Amino acid sequence: MMPMTRKILLLGEIGVGKTSIARRLQFNTFGDTYKATIGADIYTYDVLPSPMGVEFTFLIWDTDGSYGEGVFRQYYAKQAQAAMIVADVTRPSTIDTMIALGRMFADVMPGRYFAHIVNKMDAVDEDTADDLIARLKAMKVPLFATSAQSGQNVAGAFGDAATAIIKLER
Image (cartoon, rainbow, N blue to C red):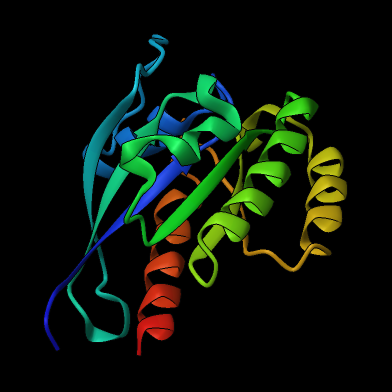
């Protein structure tokens, strides 16, 4: 099968960890200095192991969190095959924004893959995390609990996304 390259958007409010997730994927590092993304930054990530035996690369468009729902009117949102919508588990309002952006993505780009990522899981106790994850799983949207700082489940989330995209396109 031919190698696949697909464009995926990282969406969510300012400061939820979108850039940290992208940098964890591309460079396997975590920077502890914060610098807001202006517009969009582009990263690449080769999914390993290759999902379903297909060489798969993501072009990750790390978006400016200040756009809110306006992100769908930006030129770089066009032609995206998927989105990962990120929230910060320590900031409950970002969970609401994540859910709203997911609904908008599904409306604007029907039939395309999207998932919710609840980031910074290393910053909360297990009971709090378990309760939140259980409530979000009831929404029937792919959900990943991650920590860009430790790397927990970041690559796994994108590996699952790649597999889902391959299945959708077959």
